[in-house]
Image 1 (cartoon, rainbow, N blue to C red):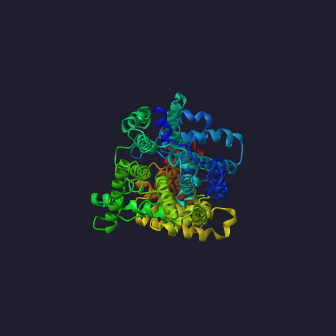
Image 2 (tube, rainbow, N blue to C red):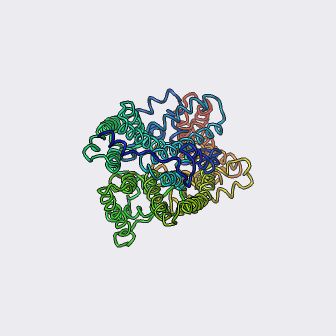
Image 3 (cartoon, rainbow, N blue to C red):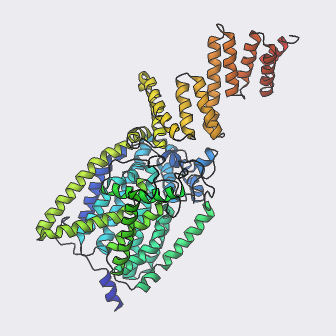
Length: 626
């Protein structure tokens, strides 16, 4: 009797049935692979963008290769960056996602600078791995859907996998190397489902152990896998198992989740428990409580809109891209009504054991984790954040299309219609995805493009300004250097006008004016940055450069205007008071204009910093008695 029940739960799909994607599993898997390569092959030539620098290039543990893996497993994902920036943990809950970062360290050991390969080749390999893992996860998804979810409906299984594969909102996840954590999390979630269903069917202990291992790896990739303690028994029940047995079946996975939580708490604790004072990491800092709740709810509409119509896309939606709104805005009530309707539909469909309930639950549970409604995640929204939820969306759309096309009548007409619809969807998506991959080539291309998409984003405007600064430094752009600097100033001024505490904006404005040789303006902006973030490591580099620039300017005008030269040197020692050469030259300039008291003070300071400074000693001797 038990064997009959297990067979009934997972009937063998009719893979020989002539369908829209003719052939068996292997043929359709190869078709998905080819489509995936067509969509994402141009990302292989990309470099690094967005958080790649923080997580990979500037992460000393990643750069240490195998030797850094122990530290990666035992620290917050951003610990290395925070320490280098003289900052504390800033994100609520911390970020413990070590598995993808371990793969970066392995890649560094095998293909990175340790092997003396050009960084372009290393980036190529990392992008290739992202695409390979993405396509592998799609093939695993198709296998899971074909054998355990839509057993007698291979068209829906394939169409779901296809929609998920080609959806343009996934470009950030695939083209941004750092987002490998999303891909790996999803891959191991699907492998967990496959192993769990195989164990329910075959009762082989190896399958259960494999499922638990996959589940643990999913959790180590990203926290999203915690939803499986609900989704696994839910799907078991929908597919025919008794409710009680479905609950009991998830207990081993619940135990793994508990072990993961204990490890996470030991490694990163609760993360930052103090409210972040930077609006870029605390996006509702300036909102009232009502505005915060209303805006969080309305943002759910933004996700839905982008899932249905993924254009234009942006790498950032932080302050102040999405304005605060209140409960008087009808968009809030629309979002609330739509999502409450989905929740009710999930419950009703679950009771009826309808697979659409699983699609809705997969969408809603993962969306809840990133919605800020339960836990502040330090971000308003992000395309990568809806990656997992989009599976539920793809399932619902595929089921809806199949239902609609069943009205075509005979099977041959339905298959023709399915092929036509799939072709149109693929064409519509590929004309978005391929150019968007190119936008992700590096920080410069990404932020200059996205600044027109989200013109109110502080972060994008700031980074677009930095992009133009970088472009101005390229030898091939020497003739356009001033033009690029002026463009940078426009974007940076836009950023600091919206966010008056934006440190990086002031730092880069200072760089711009330094390049334009407006040293007073450069100092003004760096001083503003210093007030906000006194220990910023870039200031330790910038101020000495400014001091030397003032000194050189003093040398240039010294003979014509000694008094102005002294003023320049006063600014030099103010910028870099630890440089004995600046103090020595200030003393010399003051001596020239017969300001012996200030000359004495300057030379004494030079000797405090450099006791064996012979020229300073000689200067002091020269003014004895004056």
